[in-house]
Image (cartoon, rainbow, N blue to C red; front, side, top):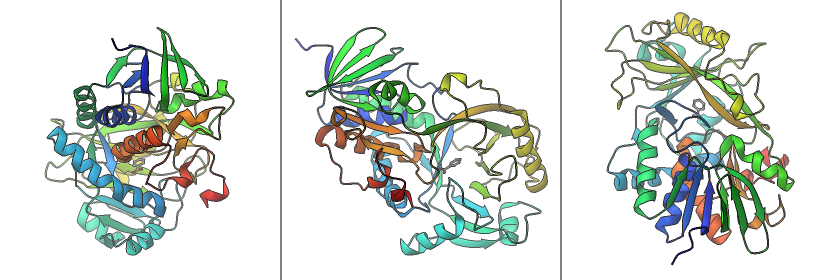
Length: 395
Ligand code: BEZ
């Protein structure tokens, strides 16, 4: 009889990355358990909303190469799940091309696109207005349209990953909270609010809650949690649509002054379009402090930008909500990804992924975490993202 408390790999966190690990580990014959405190398909611990930005371009060349390595894995996932998950509506970045943000920088990204030979159209403010219907853009604004970018179907992705994990015999347990980990020379004991398990390896994919398990072992990741506003607006003209767009602007005294929006969601019956500010301000201490109610000032900042620059949208919100952005404290580091071997005693049995705008990397993050759990190494270059990579490495 198989022991129901003993596994090759236990994944803590059943969000997109955890499910991707569950699928890819069990597909390789690993006896795998995925545990989620809330249950699957919840939006409580991470970003929410039906769509997420797909982009190839990154200012950092290592991340750019990782998106190029992710695309074939998305194609494989789409083919196994028999559904389209990435909709290539394009990715439009515009604004002040020199402004540096956690999401990137336009001028430098264009240089890296040239180097990696990724196609794009360079556009002036006037061309952006003419093509996409924005108005009153400052004259010095410019940017690019990268046509391979677009929007990812979030719920479709979760359903595909869950279905594949289940198909390969992965054990999926929701509503069970991991209380503590005890790594030793042979593996890890995992204590939950129901029972105790034993695993050869543990993957921590529990996002905002990673420090709940790491801190008692003597290490704490420098991460910041921001509850950001999401705003859905009606279109004034049904014929007008948008690519994914992101406007890069100089920060104001109060916030980062960054806004983004999607076009009409191709897989949703709703006619509304979703937009948001990316204001890295007023961090909260714990995911449990998220209220689901956006800061009214942030909603107003977004709707007044829309009122001035996007005449085809009605700036009166039809719906508002929030997402929880979990970002590294050092803005030059985009993710934590790697073995915890130099972080905690016997950390060679623990793989961790935490923080950053990671949805676009989901199939690759699963592959990398499972590679690390199974062999301690991966062919993908994640050296800069290692939890113990120095500040100098982030330059
Ligand atoms: C991104 O592409 O990484 C991104 C898009 C919208 C908001 C934040 C991040």
